[in-house]
Structure formats: structure tokens, C-alpha cells
Length: 239
Image (cartoon, rainbow, N blue to C red; front, side, top):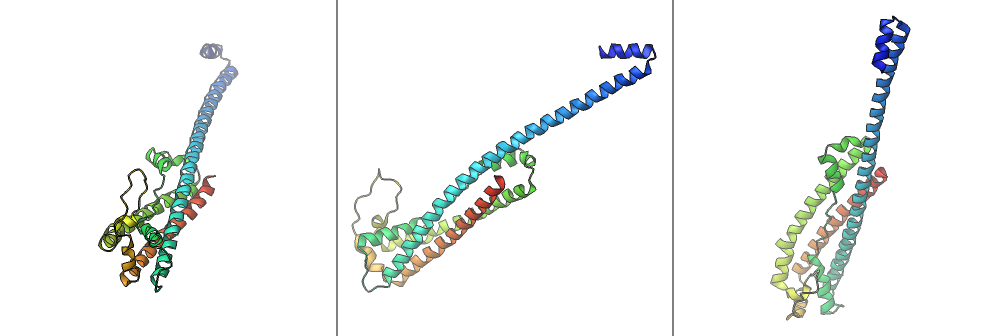
């Protein structure tokens, strides 16, 4: 229809009408491109919001996991301090059962495993460009790099469990008396030599083992507190 009218105007040498027809075409093309650009922008904006909501959910989960790890570390540290004080006494003020219970936490290794689902999807799909805030993109990159450093610290400390703490227990204490179990449906028989902890309680070796656990756990606590602080900062940027 438009082409036929345009040809008629050309044949009749109605140049004003020809110009107007061309303007209509140009304006139509321009508007079409603008609408396409706007629609693509809206689609990208919706994707950005979806990613930000997923990242926020992951960070909230990380925050919860860090709080759990911090609480566990603080509990272990308190137990180590109690054992140090008991070791310095001429006679312990706690029962054998209480001493073994405190010492059992030497096998606890508070660990933070970050949730990276949304950030992995964002970077793996090439959609990181959808995040318009450069500050947020840099913060997320720094955050997950820090999480990797924390994982390395945790791994190095977990080696102490196998190389130091478990061998000490096997050589010096009834392992069944200081068992560290997360399940109840496969209970061990009662320990045979529950009082063996009294034989080593006042020794330098015992105090050094407890001190080493205190050093490791306070380091983990510092790492996790730092990660929690950074998690809250990045959460504020996302929100």
C-alpha cells in the first residue's frame, strides 16, 4: 500500500508527497529500532533483577552458615579455655565425664562452605555484563575470592585433625570417651577407660594440644567473622 502510493507520487511528480512518504518510512524504521532497543533493555533489566534476587538469597544462606560456624568456634574455644584452667589445678573441679565432653570438641572443625550458585551461573553464562553497578561487580569478585582464601585456611587446619589431634587421642585417651558424633542411631558401647584423661590432664603435652586447638579455632573464628562482615557489606550493595 505504501509502496504503491509512493510510486504514484513519483509518477505524478508530487515531490512533496514523495518526501513525506520517505519521512514516514524513516520515522517508522527509527521508532521500530527504538522499540526493539527498549524491549531488549527491559529484558536485560528483568534478568538483572532476577540475578540480584538469586545472589541475595545465596548471601543470606552464607550469612546463616557463617553464624553457625562462628557459634561452633566460640563453643570450642570456651571448652579449650576450661581445659587449660582445669589442667593447672592440683585436682580438677569437673567430673571425668565433663572433662571428656569438653575435650571431645577438639575434633570439631568449624567449616564455612559458601553458596556460589547464582554467581557461578552469572559468570558462567557471560551475563555478568547485566549487572550495571561496577561497584557491585567488583565487590562480588572480591567476596568470592575471599571465600576461596577461607577455604584454603580451613583445609590447612583440617589437616591438624588428622595429623595432630586424632593421633594424640589414640595414643593417650580412650577414644570412645571423647567420641565426636553427629548421629545417634549407631551408638558406641560405653568407654572402658573413661578416666584416662586424668592421667594426661596436668601434662605439658596435654596443655600444648589444647593450646594448639585454641590457636587454630581462633584463626578460623577470625576468618569467619571477617567473611560475615563482608557478606553483610555485599548484601547492602545488592539490596
